[in-house]
Amino acid sequence: MASIDISVMVAGEAGDGIRQAGLLFSRACARGGLYTFSVFDYLSLIRGGHNSHLVRACDREVHSHRKTIDILLALNLDSIRKHASELSPNAGLIYDSDSVKELPELRSEVIKIPIPLKSIVRENGAPLITRNSIGLGAVFAMLGYDLNLLLGVIDDQFKNRSEIAELNKSLAKEGYEYVMKNFDGEFSLKLKPISTEKRYVLSGNDAIALGALKAGMKFFVAYPITPASPILHLLASLQRDAGIAVLQAESELAAINMTIGAAFAGVRVMTATSGAGFSLMAEALGLSGMSETPIVVALAQRPGPSTGLATYTAQGDLRFVIHASQGEFPRVVVAPGDVEEAYYRTIEAFNLAEKFQIPAIILSDKHLSESYKTVGAFSEDVRLERGDLILDHYEGEYKRYLITETGVSPRAIPGIEGIIVKQDGSEHNERGLATADANNAKKMQDKRMRKMKYLKEEISRLQPIKLYGEEKADLTIIGWGSTKGAILEALILLKEMRIRANFIQVVYLWPFPDLELKKALKNTNKLFLVENNKTAQLGSLLREFICLEPDKTILKYDGRPFVPEEIVEQIEEAI
Image (cartoon, rainbow, N blue to C red; front, side):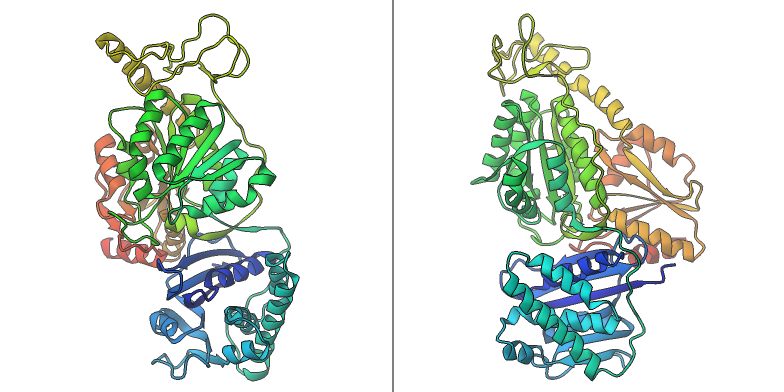
């Protein structure tokens, strides 16, 4: 059991700097050697509406947020009302007494610390948004945590704007000193630095973007859409230093067609979208499949159909991405479960796309894409494989769609002396010329689909499923994508309850790893399926490919991610 395990929430309106305050707290914890996981909850509004950033800090690696809050920094009354029921016993409440004149009913044990945040801001001639810095200083005082760690991350955040950095540092000190002078009680929970090891606070979107850069991506194009837009923002900010081209397209259709064009020219490419945008990309995905042009699509899911809940999370697009576009063609679908996997599996997606000349889809969701986790430095020792790519010369007659044993043809890029590259979105012959010949149509379809056998063999070497916990257990949980974090934390809770459990994570969802799953599940006693969708889409694949029905499905489809306590409660009810 961890000796340090504290959850702090910053809450207020959109425009109050809620996201940034949570990030500053996370980074200050990471600088002290602590591990963090944080979730940012916001509405589809520029100003107004409720925002919250919940940060969990721990002295062990932490994979998910929890159900309860230990300290709530509330910038308005609405935040207290919304989160009062989530406060843990003996929780602390820091609030703006200028905005909150009367508190709602709270448990008597809750420690209340009113601070006139607006008044302090006005006295310093500072903008209202800087209330969050005062509040963070107060949080550090309550927790007994080293204020210098906060001041250091503020310096980093505003390193090119020294006046703003000094103002926020001064306000953080005022918040810290206010609590030290006016609060004579003792808060039971404390934070302390545990190491100086260098760690980073990254989101899933950050990791996908960095993985793409490490994979050698040279062109990124996307149309903005929540929750995938941060990939576009980060890559745009890095494009000069990274030596890449980044473009905001006029639509999702334009974005994916531009990736196909750039891949045809020989560079590694990626686009990013969500389910609504991917719907528009479906036809061009088929063009990638028919023309055997390797592209990578990062798809961050959110609830649908239509616009759905634009700023919330879901796992409802699994079946869609497996079958998207007309006709049949090979593709790969990989679903990382955490920030580290988002980095490494993105590199794998680029390798597989080029090696097999297919579209590769990185299937994320809002929870993974926009949650932040403390991670160590990513490995620089990664393998890049571009497949059968001709970059200089080729002997003999070049056939872009040469029929081969593996289904993968030599791929040349335009401009190589002596080679004419012909590709077509209509059915075509080996030379790339369109034809409706029946025999040719069958041969070409067989050629393309022959890749599936070799693709499955390749994926089997990439650990398509992962086992966590004891090999022999009383029960097994199976899941995919971002549910991994809550499930791993649930395993810890179950162990404390003396329930032996393990977890099978399905990382590669297409081609479906049926052989690996059969082997992993052969000694399972009770199987619990956990998914963030209504129809248990992974469950349908288990039935289809290995004739297996879970003993219980634990589903959540209200736009919110699982917390470990929810999973444990439903398991307890079933056993």
